[in-house]
Image (cartoon, rainbow, N blue to C red; front, top):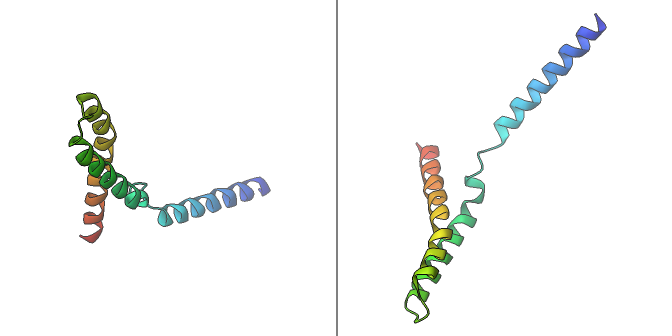
Length: 87
């Protein structure tokens, strides 16, 4: 009897704490929205400036695209998430 009471109280307290945590935390993308946006703007600006240089080549272009594409996908996901929050 005592064991079942302790077990049920542990289960109910863990259920309460897990529901409280899930209500307070948000998905990971919006937390780093400013960082993603600033990084994307910086890389796009740097790519634009360096593309006018004589040192620009296809390997440098590929390197920038390798960093820009994931940030662009994250930015689109953040904008989509923010729009869903408004609606």
